[in-house]
Amino acid sequence: MRIGGGGSTDFNQLQSDSAQFRNKDFLTNEGLNFGGFTFENESSGNYSHVQLINPSGSAVTILLDGIIATTGGATAVSVSTHNTALSGDDGNLTNLKLGGTAGVGELRSQTNSSTYGTRLFYANVLASAPLYIPFPYPIMLAAAKGIVVHPSGTNLFIGCNFMCREL
Image (cartoon, rainbow, N blue to C red; front, side):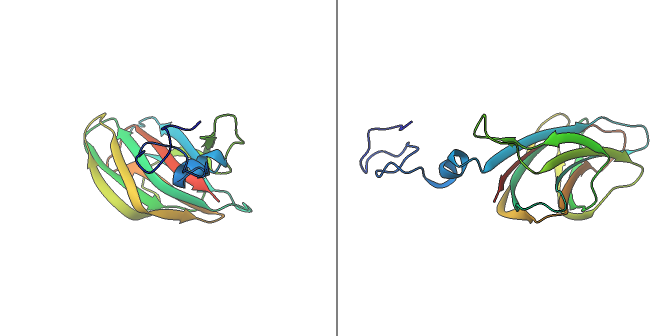
């Protein structure tokens, strides 16, 4: 699994000189890095929402490192806190150590006539162009805490990739 020949001149390697994985590579090898995608189609007169929620009673903490969002039109996208699970159950996070145990974090979706949550971030996005938002400091989701992502307008599709760790 080692990339590079070792020594201090190598800069593209997954392992240190002592054969230990480094940084996020270590977390992936331990089965602690996760990703997930969910979407909600447009609905006449409604806002489309997607959510990552750490269910109540969870023994893990989710650290959300970033999202990639796309919408069906040129609009703004909100990232908001919302601690009530949305109605659409779209599965759980996928372990980035392929074959590893699925994550605890739940992916959910729902439309509603008004927006959910308390806004943390807001950014413009072009129609069908992905918006990548890396968080310089991860958003920490303890048990029963969630994040929703939605477009600022109604009648718009929303899709979102969540990139996170479970510790």
